Picture (spheres, one colour):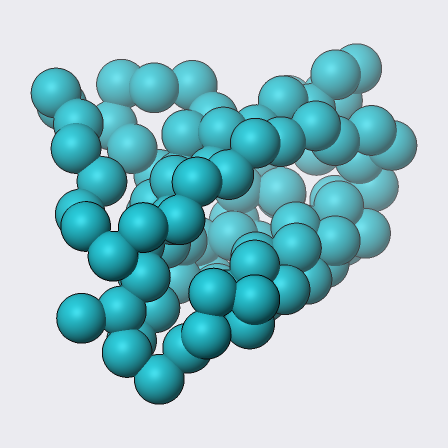
Length: 89
């Protein structure tokens, strides 16, 4: 069983268009937006990923989304575990 990540994002001062582009980039990278939560995402990695590799992949996806969307500032927190992300939605 591979790592599961929960990523919470804030995009201060981003326009709605920038947020939509940012979200589309993450979706194309197989991130799954958690229903009914503003900027919470779930990402799954197979068992071949190391914890460090998963963190690096997440950070690279975020940098890519920031660059493509033109977002100037991004803040995030992430948590990785081998258990599923528990959600009420």
